Image (cartoon, rainbow, N blue to C red):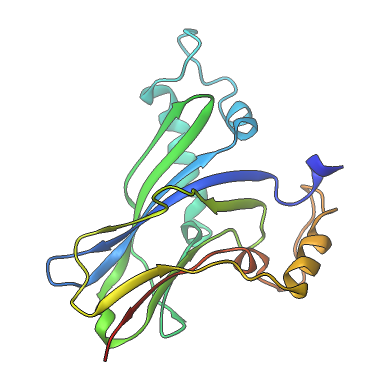
Length: 202
């Protein structure tokens, strides 16, 4: 059944590339809007005052739990310089809202040490390595640069790969249930993640 296939949660997302006054990349900002089915499941029992909606205080325990769980998976935010993963610091500025039957989670994932984009190619992807959650960029304003990149530097949201291997991976995952454990060692989520790449002229 389609409902049982991977992925099991669908997310519309935006991301922000954070740049300081010196032109250093300091991290990324995430905005994830989850599907209605996930929201209905996650919010069950949280309408403590019975008013039919979910205020910030009612959502906070869920948000804290989300952030704690995401910490075990690097917050699904993978930042690299010249192809090598660079470490991040603790998440900041996190919050969650409920509108139009959907939950939206916001947070900032800072780099442990700011990166100078003039000294190497910086890129990041946001994805679930097990592809339990699907992350897809929205069409309108998917990426925002917060700050100003150094002169000669530019960013690009790259397209997804579209080839026979990618389709084969989709077919492989299509019949995997929610209790399936990925023991293949393959990073499936990365195959379906669009990278944001920052390059600078020499």
